[in-house]
Length: 116
Image (cartoon, rainbow, N blue to C red; front, side):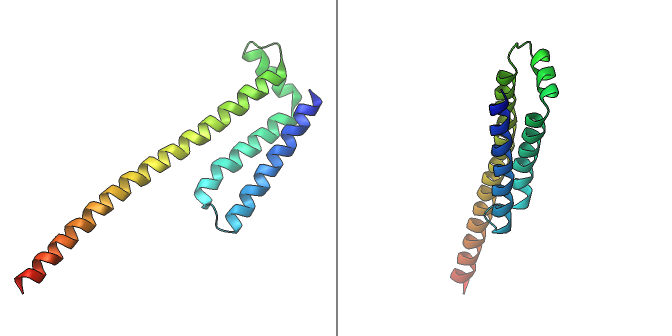
């Protein structure tokens, strides 16, 4: 189990470093990086606290703490992906509304040009 916790620690640190470099190079916006950084910090805390992991396994009714860790990792990333899906949906709706406004403006400009 110690190997799994060490691997999870390394992966969470790598995730944090990757997100921070991506923010610095403007590959990802700050407001979207918060979810990933929060997930990485949460994974780091869980992977470094074996007592917390054992407690979570007991609460989930699991006899195996590594299985609880895997379930928690899945749940954390599921929440992050859901949040990003909501953001993408909002952006799509905003794009549709903007395209409609541009079409209306083009129509009005065309009508003005025809009246001249």
